[in-house]
Amino acid sequence: MEKELTWLFLLAATLAFLHVFIDIISNRKPFKMVLNNRGTWADKLLIIVLFGAFSIIGTYMGTELPSGAILNYRDLGPMIAGLVGGPIVGLGAGLIGGVHRFFIGGFTAVPCALSTIIIGLLCGLIKQWRGNKLLSIPHAVAVAVIMECFHMGMTLLLAQPFEDALAVVKLVIFPMVLANAVGMMVALFLIKNKTDEIGGVHNSGKITV
Image (cartoon, rainbow, N blue to C red; front, side, top):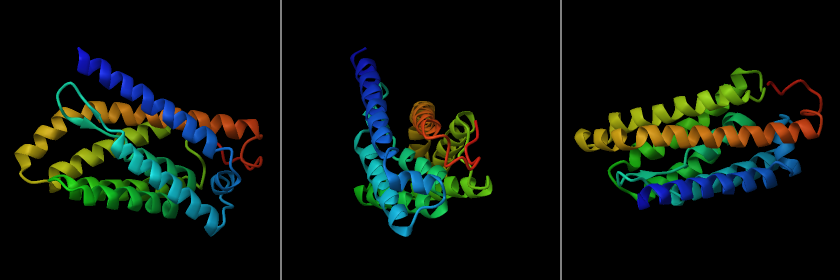
């Protein structure tokens, strides 16, 4: 019972941190410019660094589940970065979080690092494929679910021994998918509200609901 309460408390704390982070970042001009597809390279670099840092924080804010497995939010930063800023921004944030994870080590280091990098790129390509429009909240949540399932698949494919990888995936797949989906919902809700406050993204029709 104590572990269940600890997990729920840390999940709530993580979502509260995400709320504050997005609320602060989304008020800044570089974020608005990148979201509006008008960001300079300096704007994009800043967003890459910020969401890459969030990815690292997501690793350290991992919470221990009652099963003993560790739940983390590393992929969430690159996912949001990609959906907001496109392929380069998503890839950049993913590289920061992924390379950091690789040097932590462990038998899942390679698949976890690669997954974070690829997920950032894929989310950026999704924005590009959508004509640089910000996804609706339900679609963004669906993307988060698919990306976390991809992460689990990469773990099964690359981590050895397979039996240990399978055991880890069985323990974390549901809470990882759920937590990152909820995090994505919170992030997109805040971003969309912020764009609504300023009349959309410069009234360009780039926001979908």
